[in-house]
Length: 361
Image (cartoon, rainbow, N blue to C red; front, side, top):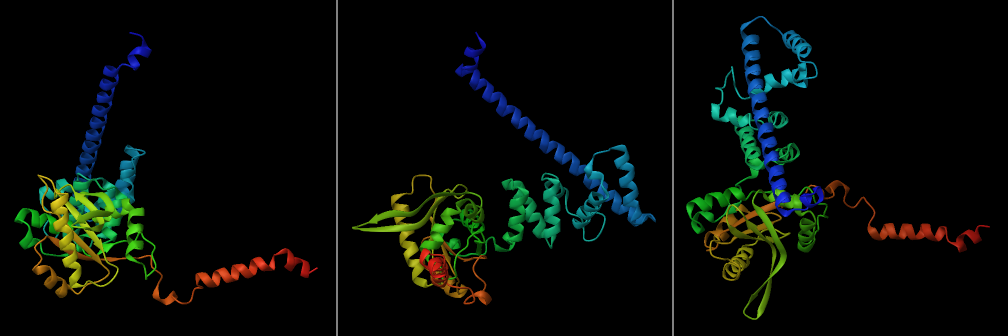
């Protein structure tokens, strides 16, 4: 068979594609194995440094000396710079090895060694406690976060926000599903990727979220799949429209999100309950878990929210959202309005009109 015929053969192309896939998998496994072996070495090196600096009369100059000797032996290896040796010592010290408090267990150490070195440094530099740090290690391992995503999640306080929404899941969902659903929701949601005025409407918020759907899905968390906005539902002779509809891969259910740019009111829960019943009746299929609702409001009174959700029969949660790109209070009223700008621009145009130039001649 000629080269041209072979290259165009379906059987050959299928086999070639399979080879490429398998090789990429080998590359990935090799990269993971190299990373794990390197971090195992770093862990032992950091532990040795801590022990030797504590038991011998070796001061700070010890790190500069060992760095010089290792770089001379392994030129071009950035990991043996004095700066990185300090990071290695700090990393091991953060997790308690060789000092109080008690060091973490071997399983936790293995988790640290399964994520890249740069991720480990980001975690120990931004987290205040080992509990918080271990949470981000586990989340990175589970979701494959890039360093940029990891940094964003830490800086947005995901650890403090996860599972904080007011929900009625405990009495509307079975135990395994209710626990997972509670963990999926957070409070507040951080929409710092939006630029909206403080007086934004629900439609403006909805449009902005969909225009930035990638960042929106990242903030919602792993498992959410966007299905649509203003999704129509017909009940009787009337048409109703869901603000945002998602499907959650881990919960195996539809998730209805309703947006409110005002404080929470108890009647919002009744309307969402109606939507959940309609979705369960019209969209839910065999194998789908009960549809879950999420009310996103500007603010809430937690006790009022708990009262409102306590007798609702459909599973739902209530959270708030925050915007970081709104105009600061101190600057409001000090900047010119659109009308003022248009008037100023209009006067500028008039000043350069032929009539104005002629009058000046």
